[in-house]
Image 1 (tube, helix red, strand yellow):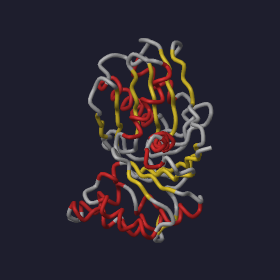
Image 2: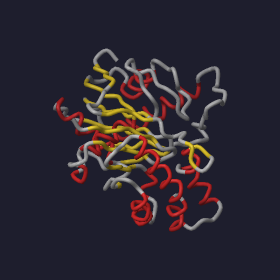
Image 3: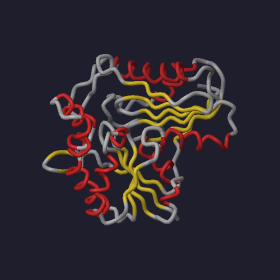
Image 4: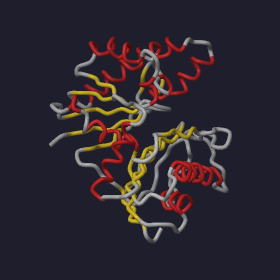
Length: 281
């Protein structure tokens, strides 16, 4: 991508946290506070209105443990699980057991991606786009189109968990690249001139991704491959790339309810919880 300035964005005062494997109720956190748990409950016939309540014990333990461990003065939540029917009422019951206030994003699904657009504003782009890639789908926002989610088809993109063998021919990575590139092309009527791309995995300074259920860990060319597949040789601009939980902290930073809080635990509740710490200097 000769004409694109691709940067690994490091946000001020933000530290990524590994929370998905926190031991809770004898399991790892993603198993008891994630989309797989909710889908299993749905399949078992649990009514929609009762799904959020069944997450309450795990959420209480996780938030209490993490808030104390990281000595925070507030917790901020975003992600698909926050949209469950009755989640707000359930969270109100959890709050008294916590050592600090807890807030849910006003727009839990798209708040991080909207923050991505704000991060692009200093470049004065004509057509910025933000993609928040999750392990169940991709949230897309721009100034010219309605926000949209592209759902992951697990028949085409099966989930690869830790310890599972990956295809030796790399077809799973090619499929993931095609999925993200297609979402960008379909969502954006014209090529963007600025892109914020959040990925659901650790990223080093050279944009080499760590593990997630797409199975692309160690694929050094991942971001370049996505841009090439989506844009070909069209256009030019700036691409800011970061972890999805890090992007969520930027949404939390602009939440007026957190203005007086100096140390905030930000959790994304989706397929599996992601986390980052926001410290205001």
